[in-house]
Image (tube, helix red, strand yellow):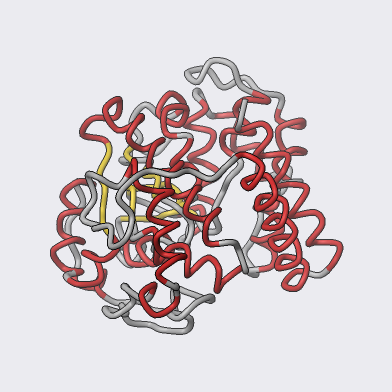
Length: 328
């Protein structure tokens, strides 16, 4: 195996700037984060693994499960080369599960199998899996990007039609998980605020580079292609330094207050100030169930519109399989 540093996991709530940060970091020739998002690591490890320090999975069965993941479909849709059963033979040299996943991650980095330097992945929901990932990858570091929950809610609603209250609930869940895991990760965890990255990208990227023990490169300040294909930053090749605080125009005071009440108990240690709420008031379980079903249908409709009926159904089923396994 290559003797390079890694992995790095870039995590956070969806619509928080994880894609922007990944693309900025990937401009550094010494950083090669996998693209697209993986999602499959907890699923494949929990189904085929046992001891993180010993890779002895059945290669045929592992590949069959890997090849059915939405990750492969998205890779093909992006026009990227995808691993075949023959490519999976490389995993026979892996001693640990970290070794095995490194082979896969490097194959899907922008530089392909010849990728050097720091390797890793940007999958936002891995913020819920950091403790497990640290067991699989003892040398892993975690970069957690955090964005104002009110802007996250507005962005998710505009991108996918998701209910802003459920988005706020998920943001609070993600922050709670991070608060639980961060002490266990110590210096291998770093939080970055999206707004700080927009306002002073050089300072933040230098801080991140120091955390990663990688040299800062000025090229990381720019994008070679647009980072975003949804929302107000769609198609932009530069950092949009004004892309925050939009919730004030998009939300009614009543809606904003309700979002603030939902996130109230996990927002204390952030720079975000509550403008209306003065207490924590969570969503009721019946309301959450109803919103979850409605958002699930909207997500499926979104994928079907972009991928077609057959692939849309495949992605939806694949995501459900992974989430079910990951929740165990």
